[in-house]
Image (cartoon, rainbow, N blue to C red; front, side, top):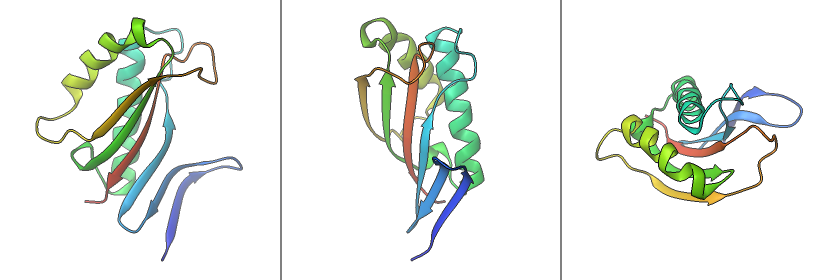
Length: 117
């Protein structure tokens, strides 16, 4: 079976597609000085662009893992943006955990798996 990799560097691929499933590398916002709401919006925007490039969409999400720097401080704000972004009736399997992220300014990172259209 063919494995397709897109936007690849020496460490990772932003998109890997195999057997009708799209896997995205962990996505974060661009402005690491922004609020949790803004970082979440930016991250979800990146996810939408990558899913489109891969031949998928947010309506085809299978699973999402959300990593928050501080779950007590950021869960409500992240969910407010998530709830506006996600169409009704297509909620993926989801886990949200608190994690030490790779840069101090990163408040949220999302890892996504989706089906191809």
